[in-house]
Image 1 (cartoon, one colour):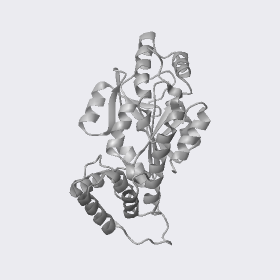
Image 2 (cartoon, one colour):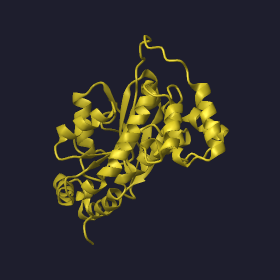
Image 3 (cartoon, one colour):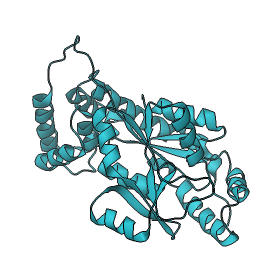
Image 4 (cartoon, rainbow, N blue to C red):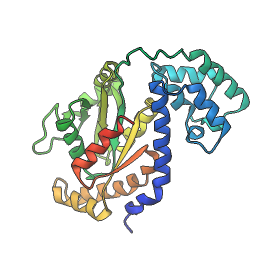
Length: 298
């Protein structure tokens, strides 16, 4: 089997640029620089603009104080599918959405100080790409960012601390948290152990206006996107496939069978990078961490 073409990053620059353009539109609406109704009008005028490719749920979710739950209820009331994009709205859907946005729009007050702005950023990527190392660098050098601590059923690796690197849980403890609805997302990774993100610390931080970074796997990133459409998804890439293999073998934490399973998973995960809002290549940990943090203000 030939290795995946991870160096095709240059060929996907247009798609990445479009996702960043949509993220910028959402930021403008969130900050009050643009009204949501103006974004809708722009999307209807020109289908080639990034506004036209935005999902309706993304636009509504960008409006201050409208979280995922209220956004979902509004979409239901407007009778618009969660997957519908602004450029694909029918005449009646457009009219209902436009009327809602105009009613929701409040006069701007230039002298009113802005409250704290929070952003949920998800960092995902293939095995051994260095997600944990980049996240640890952000924890150490960017205290303004809350790094969410995941729970897992796998045993700790040498040097890992419970409550700092992960919450290490038994299968029974993990099951109880699932039953109580205490995870924002959870998944079984590499057909072995389960990982999940406790919901309560995330909700509390977002309410306080803090930015939160989740370092999770691809399955978890997709679940977060469904629950929080306004979250920014960042895909961490290795410089080359050979470097990814070298890192996996070099860390020596898996036996040969486990390495093969993880590399097979990595081949699948690399193909999903175009689902993400931004791509960061982890050639240097400090530079990659700096770029991830900078995306929090986009």
